[in-house]
Image (cartoon, helix red, strand yellow):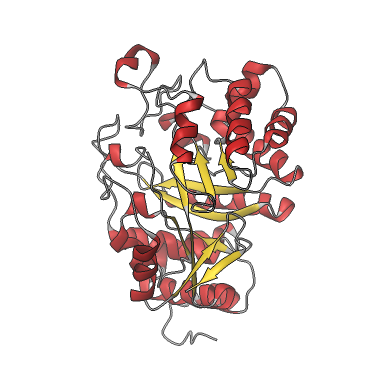
Length: 368
């Protein structure tokens, strides 16, 4: 157990609980997040990573397809989407065009396609059911991870079906799981400032709960580093932790760093690497019922991702040979987010960890 001899007396009982694998409360979490030295958070997070996943760091071979960047919503932090009135700056892929992106790869060369994009009023539930069916025709074994809760809420509302009915229809067509996007920050004080017109916290949580009931696992995200305070971060994580207690349906937690390029919040400075490390380390400690913590490398950068492998992170997403523009358009370091399997393996090995290729559900495909 970690020595508490030189630790602030207010933190000692919290550190003891963490070391004994006991859950910490929101109040204890807030104190730990705001008062603990970075070295302490890192040490605790690293010990949890080792206990939970050993030295394994997971990745998969995937591509991202973004059907459109035209969106009916107006999120203040988004540099990516274009409202209908600005559609000359947008794109709309046809089902055939999206299928062509998949057929560029040989059978088995990729194991997952990740489909998310803007919320287009003409791309509804039937459209995406048809897309999934076509993908499954050409790649029956390919796992389809698709549609944020924001997209799902809109398409179910437009189709006048319940979330359960809509998800059942997508699952029957061949969809396997949900990504974690659209969560942003759950606390309404923040949500009302940065994304007030899209799905509510309650709707986001309900959609993921319904998916889990249908044996469709999902991911969970949090957008950090903008106008939120630590109390909002704790509130967000606590809501996710509670739903995970209830369903066990989340695969991984993915903190997403706010990037300030080309959006309505560009006046807000991005947080430092130190704050990234603090947030990720704390995530590994507080999110005690999430087995996996992912650093999404196209957003946060390859070097930072590699550093975070020593601070609780055990997954770095995938090869991403794709059209992903959500973060590159906002100023992310990697403007052309592509890494080969060999490059990912080297990045992980250079950090002293063991690369493991996984499928979407974290079944091991190959250990390097």
